[in-house]
Image (cartoon, rainbow, N blue to C red; front, side):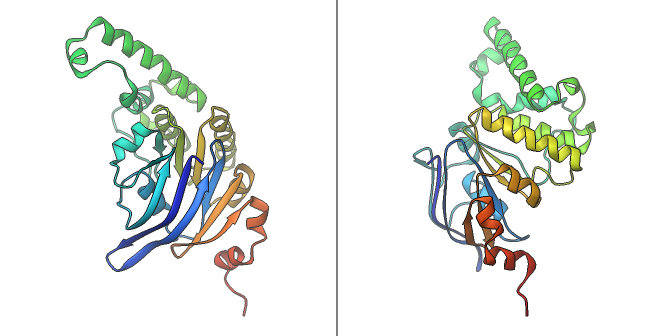
Length: 252
């Protein structure tokens, strides 16, 4: 298993955000995390990436514990993520935005950068070429020199994914990537997630678009009020009475 959670809990003061969460993600699969608003889905991503400390339990990535590991170290270990609210740098172009994702993988040091050595110039050209390929992957090569924040909403979402991919992750966490997208943009996203999987990158995705999730996920876990209530294939999840109740309420 690439990612394993064992009895993971998170409390904020006296409030339990997550309680006893256990599941595992296989290498190469697309794994979905669903549940009503406030179920603890984004908190889960924050625990995996070290934004919040775990209150109890263990999180293991590629055989190594990530509990207590700082966010920048989780990136170096091979975990990338996008955010529910788009976080792009205002004045940067799309290409420059992707380059920021590559800084932890560049081969030249601080001194070489300062002195503008030949090695640094070669490295910069190499990085720009790779960054352009990531833009191409997400369908933004024509927008390479556009200011990132001036792009339409759907393109900004894809740009954030390109920046995450530029860290060369083994695992990418996508937090509501289809939020605010129209039908054609959502279809492009579905195809993009397929391409990411074809690159050998494992995908864990939080999303409220159930049609998208049932089409792209191999397996899903369902949260409600900070607890895991179900796990299984899309068909198993659709037929699960606890999941139906969580989303539709209990009939009188």
